[in-house]
Image (tube, rainbow, N blue to C red; front, side, top):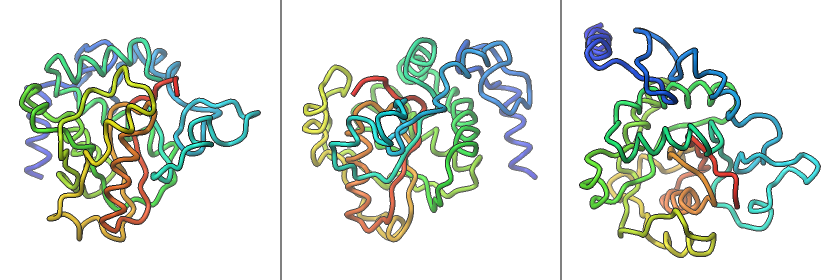
Amino acid sequence: MFKNFIEKLLELVYPNRCVICDEVLPYGFDRGVCPKCLPVSEALCLLGSLCIKCGKHHPSTSGELCYDCSRLERKFESGRGVWLYTGQVKDSIHRFKYRGKPDLAVSFAKEAAAYYKATAGWEIDAIVPVPLHPGRLKERGFDHCRLMAAELGELLELPVIQDALLRDKETSPQHGLNNTERRSNLKEAIIINRHKREQVAESNILVVDDIFTSGATVDACARALQKAGADKVYFLVLAIGAGY
């Protein structure tokens, strides 16, 4: 009761905003996109013919797996992204991460939770966010994946294991790197937190991130979690890039 009161009070003081246009959402609104922007969101939503492994748009005539997933040994079981990473969605995620908009985590989580409930049929035991290196955290002032994971945990009624994964070294930004460079960039960069091993062991884990392009980050997370004894690793991201 007290927690609900605090949440309602916070929403009044810091109202939720539309992830597309950044306008204030009506009080108590259960979506993260305003009615005006719903057509934009629906147009970019990843539905229909998708790769059964990574969730990218994929012609059904080419089999169940996209080009990347047909030739790479994926460490994750399966995954999905809410939108295609382009246009206003791309701008929105950039605003969230780099322009000091941590409050958008609530609205993004609402959209991710709604998409997850409508499309994923996985048995998940816990949520784990992709880790941010302490240096990047100091620059931004907040960890966007950590915030989203916390909100998702509430909405999906799943435990969240914060800091289960750690960035052992600071890597170059993945943007602009090719597939080989992305995987090399992340080699041994993501490790398990030894204090959280027992919490992930024998569990199905949902890894939460903002963007999926080549899958190198999610694969690195899955590898570290499986080394710690996790069973199956799935992922949920806000957006998936069109390229390979």
